[in-house]
Image (cartoon, rainbow, N blue to C red; front, side, top):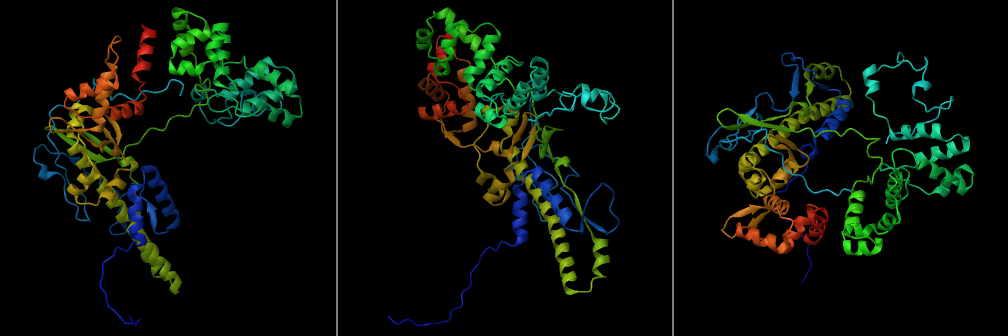
Length: 521
């Protein structure tokens, strides 16, 4: 076969990811905080963009980029699935979403969804010493003898200011330990604390850093372990619990033996614990209760950071006539303007080709950002509206009525790609009458039913949790028993799946639950 060269003309289609398209895709998957940071960077980089301060723009001088939040999306009553959501023509947002008719909105007295089981055993900068021997930042460290005249904060703000753990320990160190060397050792030990109140390093490091004996460091540590809160400055969980028991005068030989076998306590192996501690059932139950009342993280009451609440992207409420009304949260919508007047002014004064090219590129980038923000807001609204329509039973009756839902189903209804729906639902939250949920929460796999129906995996997990919570003390449900009960309710599920769901919810096995219930009985 001879090798020859020839020219061919072929026609094909391909998707070219332009920088503008990449930016639009990137904006879809950003959370509200990430989006705000991105817009701030664009405001600093692009001179033709400016933040909307709320004033009305002059005629034709500015192009505003904001989400379609002027009118709430109203979910009209109706059983007609064909009126699900308005079509997006690329320029204007949909005016309304026709969802499912509302009949019974959950009352305020209904309890929120149960949270998963949690394991019961699951900082600010360090203080520095001022010249007068007290911690800096205290009343004696400032000018004016501790008055509040030099502080911009009000008196009520200073009184309500929480005391940090390091400051609390430094005050005790100043009062209880007089030797300057021991105080310096104590400061180093306090700086080695982690967020739970344990020492995060070795004592030999302190000894080497200060050039003192290791025995003196250990002696100072022993003295400081009597500080408040009890259990602080421990090097292990056993030592932390032992310090708290000693503070309560409950560290007897039997309790010390129990601390030596904490792995048996975690497994609730009461037979082995009775043998190890040399006690009867009554004493063991009392010791077990004493252990559970201890705090494995003594620093958790200090150095706390105020949890940043989740700011929802979409707000949902009941409307008149048994409808759902959804709207975008205006607090999360960055608003920027393209200053057309400024663009006209500087475009007429540019002379060089490079300057004209730069102004043209910045103007195009600014307008594209405007359109991308508008499209992002519109897409979020469309996806959220269809999710509410699909999961209407969940919002009215609870998690047991959640239906299986996939990204593909939403994408087909709103005529978007599945990957677009995935990006929209990532890191986006909706405030509903039942609480704040991530949009991803409403997508669950399907579990077949014996009656031909399908059940949501989240609903099955809730059912398993409810069965275990209601089980009697004398008849703890095994995984096989749970499978039989679910099968009676029309849910076909394997025993290993029940075990997987139970472990994901941090629910102990039937053997561990039986031991715990027998102890508490």
